[in-house]
Length: 244
Ligand code: GLP
Image (cartoon, rainbow, N blue to C red; front, side, top):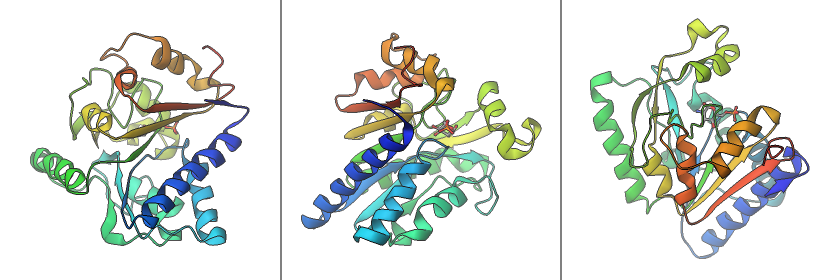
């Protein structure tokens, strides 16, 4: 879906997400959301907060699972995804704190494998992810599934690509401060979500969007495995769609 700009696209995605949350609430059911960080979804979150404040959208039935977190990362660090999610969304809506799940960047490295299994188990226990929001990195990553990540990969510790660390450098006041690793849901975890919405804005994403949509599915651009998903939407502004 190509929109004239990211503003119009984000407002529309937020509305559709709000409709889904409300429908589930009306049925007395929870809405299980897979959430992303980065600059792409921020306007969606702002619009959800507005809908909460002005139109009574409640998050009481929402259960959320975030895709990823830098490793190591203290939750109160400026760059942590825990902090990001609270700042953009959770602190402004009525989600139950116990319904929020974000990979833990503080656990010991030898416990990450157990943590990954536990995270996947929590997703299953919640009934699986209904609606997964995604961005895409210039390396073709979804979550932090860098090139080399296969379609069956699960929640685990990964090594960040050089390009990803360059892109994150300004957030960390220099590339040397960007963590070398991260915990991420796997491509396989993401592919199990019932509905996937990937957002990409701006000319900097045009090349990777072309590979995502038109390239062969391959480990070198893990996002291409979304082509196997039965219900995926790629939501773009005109600049990100320019090479299609
Ligand atoms: C980070 C996140 C990804 C995100 C990507 C794109 O690496 N871990 O989940 O999709 O960046 O970020 P942006 O939306 O800022 O372009």
